[in-house]
Length: 126
Length: 138
Image 1: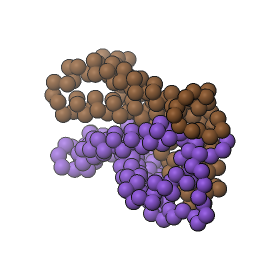
Image 2: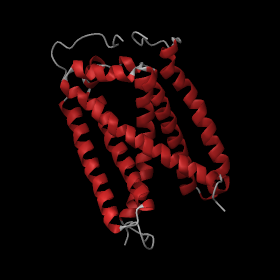
Image 3: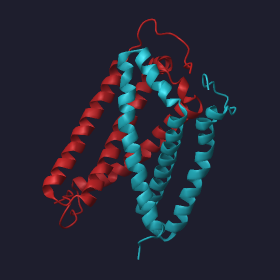
Image 4: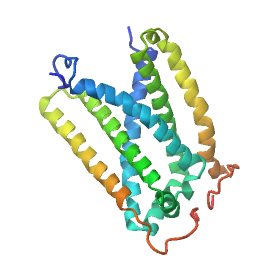
């Protein structure tokens, strides 16, 4: 009865996003620990983050974080507000829309430097 | 039992670990929403990621607020994520032996990464003479 409906997809996406974010977090803790080795080593790692392919991966991370956050809010609403479960499908649509709406401007800033779009920031050398 | 075992009947409700974990996920999530989104905005949007260099970190971490902010992000994020991973393991691993292996690994990883992150945050001290531009030349 529940298989293949909005409830299942929202749960599955939430889980996949969460695991993806966790995996990134472990990598991130390691790359920040490069601070211990001084500016040369650390800055080399940061230069990697500026490359086009890593920017694309960052987009996936941002999408995952936004979705996981907003769907998490939806879950908390269902947990703590008894009537909310009736609107779970509507809330799922809202979660998807808000995720995309918040994602697009952030994506512009992240991928913009690859194409030379104006961001007001000064990404060096792109 | 009030803790999930990965097999058998679901853990009993009440004042046990599983109930605490349920509340912890939601409370940590509330904190993380603000911590993470602001972190993303500051490091990817208001500043381009290629400008988040050693120099920028030195400037930020001169103020202990940012070290504490990042440490909260580290702690809440690790615990929230690793606890979620424990739930995922409970969904798929039935064998008691393997569950012990997986959940112990999760616990060990949590400890290792927490220590690594905390040590970095506490001990970071900019190397003398590391002043330079924030944005890195490509």
